Image (cartoon, rainbow, N blue to C red):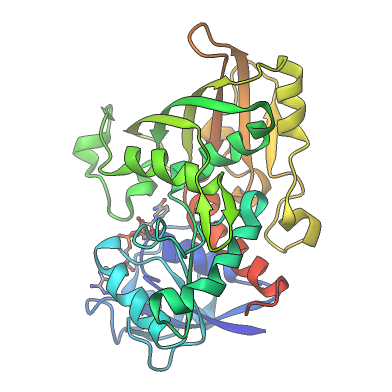
Length: 345
Ligand code: NAP
């Protein structure tokens, strides 16, 4: 077993790490870090546990440490608030740790992989250049923003048809804003048409993820993405309404077949967190829905449905993914599993 630490262990994503890592075949939670508010407390006293599965006893008793490298294991997952993640993750990387991060701070750096292992496992090669570029003994690997994961997963199999333009409108769950997140007064019976920085992240991160490794950098995919993001009164699961224009407009059944048959390196390697099929296509007229479909494949599957012609672009469809699992903790764990199988841990 490999000991792992979790930075930001007390937050919404931190809790999801702990839940997903209980009984993990390779990784054992051995160290927890958070802010001064939590430091020194036992984990179960430091966090307001929000998940249906109980906290494993051995983790509940672990003390929460300061978010600083001394005493932490070499492999550290980060679910830190982005206002502090930049400095803290850099300190861990400089001290020789492998930081597998959810935060936005390093995602767009030239030598930092922004990974979805089904799509761009080869981008891990950027790590060779990262040491010289940043002067770190350790490394940082990132996963995308939670709504970008859903979009990129749905688009990746469609690259073969020449992705040209994408318009996406999201309906994002409240758990995406952390805990306690959006005040109930603001969200109940309401839609909030603004999530700070989210549209810019979807428009830039997608191009890097779908882009090509070119030596020690990524050439971004030429697709143009226009995103509108909204927060809705859903607990878990980001739903996205997506329209796409192609260079070579395929027939609808070719799109469905491309989605259904999509597989990647995690499936080839049979990584522990990899679903057998990372995308499912639902043929019912009213799916996917967060209440019914968000937990498919343990929250690691992205569900797609409602494919139909678009009178403005070529096709439109709906996609859904679990924001704190495929969009955060599960994504980071899959990244670490890939790194282990690629001999990088
Ligand atoms: P959250 O619930 O607000 O948790 C934030 C965590 O950061 C807590 O553990 C908090 O510790 C810790 N923290 C805050 N200030 C700190 C400081 N000064 N020093 C050390 N630790 C500090 O947020 P979240 O939703 O879990 O998100 C965590 C990260 O993942 C963010 O960067 C977010 O953008 C990203 N993300 C979130 C989602 C999602 O769906 N929620 C999806 C993808 C990515 P205390 O409890 O001690 O304050």
